[in-house]
Image (cartoon, rainbow, N blue to C red; front, top):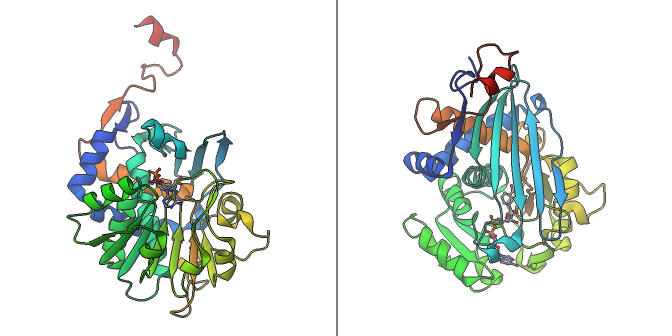
Length: 349
Ligand SMILES: NC(=O)c1ccc[n+]([C@@H]2O[C@H](COP(=O)([O-])OP(=O)(O)OC[C@H]3O[C@@H](n4cnc5c(N)ncnc54)[C@H](O)[C@@H]3O)[C@@H](O)[C@H]2O)c1
């Protein structure tokens, strides 16, 4: 079956922010995440089919700009994404992303899309996929430290996939927590606003840290991370930008990563020795390694975000819009009748 949504001669399908919001709303946030978890698992199971590399990153005083390319030989995906924690002080988002999916056979783009919302969905789905393998049995309480753009998606993912019934929120900015409480008020979750990280992690079997701060921060003191917890740390994703106490990492029974070469540079393990033991997640999914062998183990996901997850998100979106009109056509590739006569495009204007 062709990868193309429309003929390559017709133009490039483009999904704007408004269209993406409409697509997600009509499908349902939780339903999107559930479907994405399934798609992510299918793609992680065929890990070896992907041509993988660490992402390209250009660092500046306040942030980073990254390109995340990947191919499975049939389709090529690439996300442009930044990370500028200072941006919210300028009324801009910390993370702004756009994505492209291409057909490897022709090299033509298949899809261009906003990727802020899609990244939030795929990141939440990735956390839930990890929690399925790494969390203790029947978790009921989630703590989310960092209540910015990613927060609600993480909470809803853990509700939909893990059956979480209570979410405890903490952010150094009380307005961020207030916003998340409001957004989650109709979610069916018991939502508790907390005034400290200590209070937020009380009774939580799963902790998600998704803070943004361009420094090596400690958002959770080591003594707050109890045995048995599944700690999903996704805010530390850049050299010099981490969230956890080194002692917590060293105490963990298992540290799970996406693509080890990238996480060694960007993840929490950048502070550990080169041979600090980690397990790539695909090995757990394939049954080659165990994520957890007892209920009192501390399991940490050192998540930095990997290109294969964006590939999954882009293909998921392509399939969602295939039979709908939720896209525009962009005139991005010349479509003159003689492909060798590019000059005619100017002459015919
Ligand atoms: N691993 C991934 O795949 C992935 C994907 C998307 C975003 N991220 C990262 O996740 C983080 C959150 O992203 P976002 O879009 O929600 O950012 P955001 O700026 O919208 O929200 C981050 C929140 O963290 C809070 N915060 C900062 N320091 C804190 C601390 N010590 N304790 C508690 N709260 C604190 C801020 O006040 C802010 O409300 C960023 O660092 C981003 O780079 C990772």
